[in-house]
Length: 137
Image 1 (cartoon, rainbow, N blue to C red):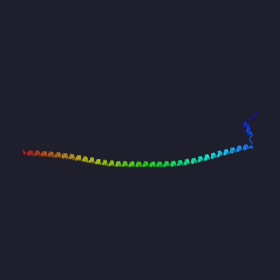
Image 2 (image 1 turned 30 degrees about the horizontal axis):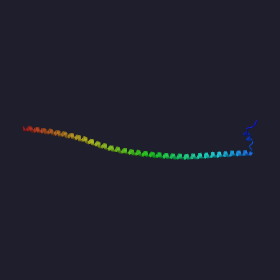
Image 3 (image 1 turned 180 degrees about the horizontal axis):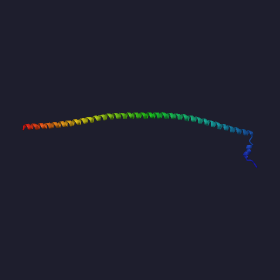
Image 4 (image 1 turned 90 degrees about the horizontal axis):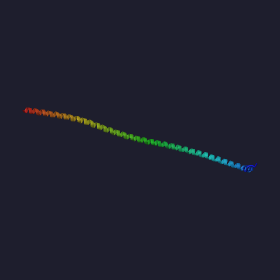
């Protein structure tokens, strides 16, 4: 039975070739270790950068939220001031209208009083005229 060529080739490698093969494996292993270390270092750097960016975004969000809250507060305050001014204006106008209504009621009362006085005066005139006519006869 004959051995496959690759087995016979492996067996026929000299110690020098074996040493070169192992040195090659060691170099590749070190290269992989260096690459892995580089990747871990890069991951740590990216993680730190991401953490800083997250902190910056958090601070920016907090600032924007605070500014937004301030703007809304200012808008509400201005709106409240306008409503208060309108309420004051409405209240003043309402008081004016109440005064006018009161004056109108007083005027109506005075007008009725004057009508009654006028009617009484006419009635007294009629009575005087009737009395004067009665004396003439």
